[in-house]
Amino acid sequence: MQLHRSFYSSSRLNLASVFRRQCHRQLHSFTRRLFKLPSPPPHPSAHHHDLPSFLAYADRTSLSPNATTYIGLLYEYTVQQTLRASAFTLHRVGGRDDAGIDLVGTWHLPHREHPLRVIVQCKSLKTKLGPNLVRELEGTFNQSPVGWRTGDEIGILVGPREATKGVRDALTRSSYPLIWMMIERDGTLRQVLWNGKAEQLGLVNLGVEVRYSADEDADSSNGIVLTWDGEEIPNMEQVERQVNAVEDRWLRSWGDASHGEQRNKSELLDAVQKLFPEEKPLLWGTGACSTLTDADRVKVIQFLDSKTSAQAEAASGIKHTST
Image 1 (cartoon, rainbow, N blue to C red):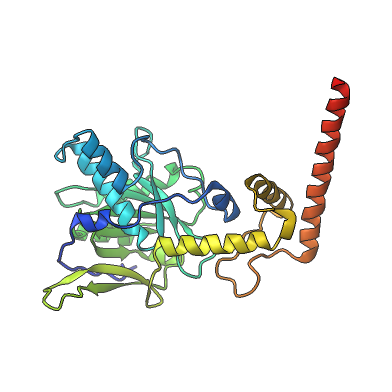
Image 2: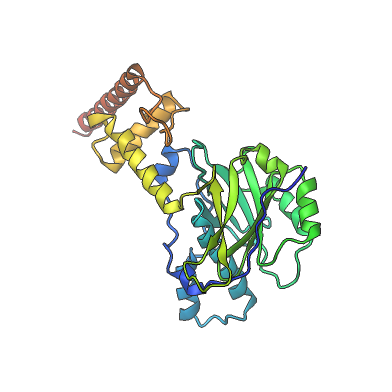
């Protein structure tokens, strides 16, 4: 078994460029339910949730950049921010009961209706990373949060230095789908390795390309980008726009059944999931965005109507009793 597609380059980006990128956002809970995405665990901090909010918090509280907490959190949020450019949406779960996991989320690869679950360990160490860290990552598979134990999850080990031979050999031998990423502390993606188990999970079209600077006088590249079928993977902002557009199409397909109100949208989705638990809007479908037939829709509407009638009768009974 061999590792696949490794690139390494040697220029730097300023951390300010990472700060200026789009802030991390969470998909709405309704959207997560509709597209069957796992709900992230509670965030371990009430003061920060992404790179910009952490930097603001650190400045506000005069947290020393030399503090271990600052260095670790800064790196985790930098990784979170960097991977959004490759269609990852990640949530920090670090804390006392994190089982060694720093980030969890989903990877929305092109033309895959079901995104992959990912569990991420960030190792912002000055020393070389050893194969023991690969074994540590393997141990997190059975301790990942609810919603991430589906059999289609990938473990990702991230560090600011190039993978050692020991790490590469450990990845190759592993019976788990694993990815190694070198992400510098300024957010530049430098190296990506994945093992055969990850490729068996569906990464056969994954690749990497060097991103060269637009400056003709530059001596080196600006890191690498992940590709799919030779095309750069869309960033998470593009994925979110597509998700929102398909969600709107799905709701419009019900006509007046949803009325565009949050309460009614939720009631509609409750009914659909009760009667047709496998239903999920199709992001990459070329025709209708739903798998439901007209007869299925009629069944859902009848269910909603009967529920509304039952609620009205119950309310009427309560009113008569009170009078």
